[in-house]
Length: 459
Ligand code: NAD
Image (cartoon, rainbow, N blue to C red; front, side):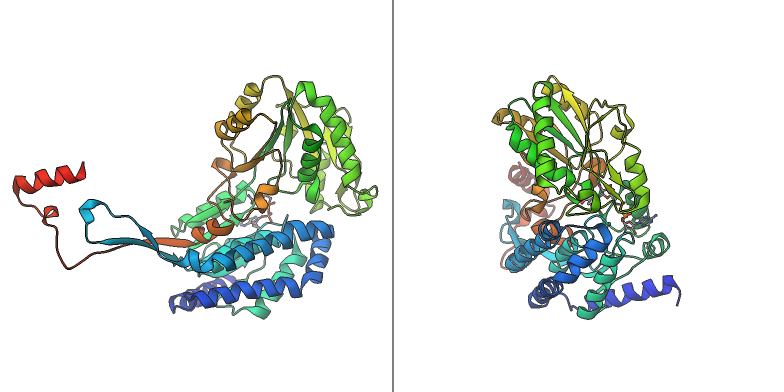
């Protein structure tokens, strides 16, 4: 069987499975979510092991940013599933008197979820929670750059789920290219924008809708009235967790010039207190995914700019948490998403100028504002367009299952997490149920009397 025939078979089997109505039932969907919960619990040790092998993820990061987020999403989905699935009643205008209007949440069918390597478990399973809750069959394509996690996912999915319902396809560019030729009912892609375009192009062949969870340069802004110690701690944590390989990590820092010295001093202190002295040997600190990314990142380490860190261990692919100062917008590090543990610092005099500069660039996936003035907080959140973000925090908005998560413009399209995930993978089928007890006449043509009544009703 060729790759193409094999993938075609998978999609055909899954479509049949959905069309036969196997996934419609509330109890079936709930059981699948419970099963996922059990898989996480039963395989906790192996999950830690595979994430250590792929990225040297520290145990507390695995608990907080991988297993913990998936568990929270599962809890919310299991708790709310029945409610999410219920048809939604909506109002009807006076012209529709006698009728009832409602929306049925219908499964889309067979969905493809393509995941990246940086949170290889969480970014595979959280979209799938939404897809399963919404009653779809799922093909997961995990990232080839996190092979131990991909193998783990392939094994547990095969052992626990009927492949006509949920299956894992492994592989790199050749396999993914073939897979993308199949007709899916939705494609959910997380990763860089170059491949995002490939995905969207392939999806257009079948008019398949897509969700694209992309990246971008997410700023952290620190204003003069910010709680500096708190800002330093939360920026350091958000930036250097997973060695900066986080889509919502603060990419660069914009600080009001009068508090810059104090902030940098506090951040250096926080790096020392939050991370191990032996991090270059891999103690409690993630490594860079591969040599190519390691080389790309170390090229940014210019002695003239390093104010903290800058050391690395080439053998272990580890780069110290690093701060670069005296950076301006034209520097190479400001031209692309960094996706590593290097934080360039820029300063501003007026917040308005800083915001205008952010607005003149592509819309970021996240934005973080540190400052105490509520008016300024609202202004920043409302004046600049970005995927989502926080006031006086970084990263943590992503872990709230009640907040839809997704980008805007070049940082992505569509969203998920909690109910947003269920909605992404559902078709909203609008139904009008009309009465047969009477029939209001004015929609039918019948001279000026009805036209006049109609105009009155519609105005
Ligand atoms: P990646 O290289 O693992 O690629 C993602 C997926 O695309 C994988 O499944 C991979 O097999 C597939 N792929 C790669 N090349 C392909 C090709 N030529 N044709 C078809 N498929 C292909 O991950 P990445 O792109 O390096 O991920 C990093 C990027 O993802 C960053 O830009 C980051 O900001 C973004 N990201 C976004 C989010 C989010 O939630 N918005 C989360 C994590 C990462």
